[in-house]
Image 1 (cartoon, rainbow, N blue to C red):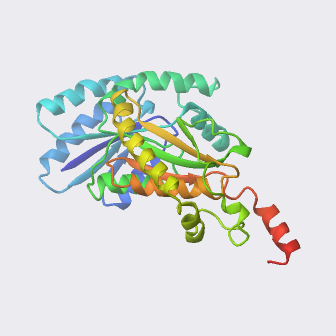
Image 2: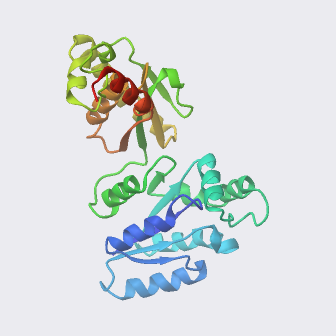
Image 3: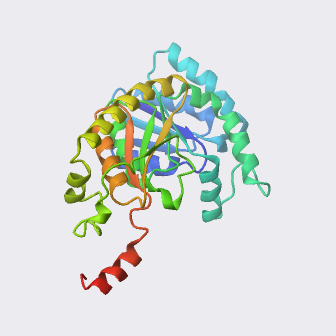
Length: 299
């Protein structure tokens, strides 16, 4: 039997994850009081195959009883009863934003400040994060991207490392991304903006990609970037980091940076980590482009 404990920070996506697991054939129970979990698991392991996939949601709503989960997990280890812990996390800034948007109250704050509740929750769930088999940071994940990660781990039984890589293209004229860990400037490459037939296309289109990557310099840079990231990632993991934002910038964030971001994402796709690509500024000039193309008679 596959027994999964879904836990983590309130607002990080636990309810959505349980729904995804339920859709994938898991028998799911949310917010079961900790004192009842031992009785629940005892019944499960006595059923001999009636339930082959089970997931339970456990979070700070269990109150003071949450601390009782730690000795229970030790007992499961002693009895050789297998279990996995999925810990869902998110940045404080994103969690606060989610609470404000939904107008929900954090379980630990009442009428107080959300920031204080989040800080206390991190402290009280730290032991679960330390024991987690999988840690997913949902700060920048779309629902479909979260589902893709859940399916990879719990449906496809694929390999997984507690590390998420975001490759982010951007335009320097709109500012460097504040959450970037590594920033690379590709403005030294040939710029399709000055080629009339490519000016209004993007790095998601083959014509632009071929133009940007036509030189030996572009290929050499891509090779060196791949080598550097493959060297750095294991070292970041050893230091306890669970996510990395690699920002690649050009002037407007539309041609060169998009091309290179797509290319390096493809190169890193065979690694045992979560990886996604985002193009922050690719549509920033859309309105101006339509106006200019109209004036030039190209629409």
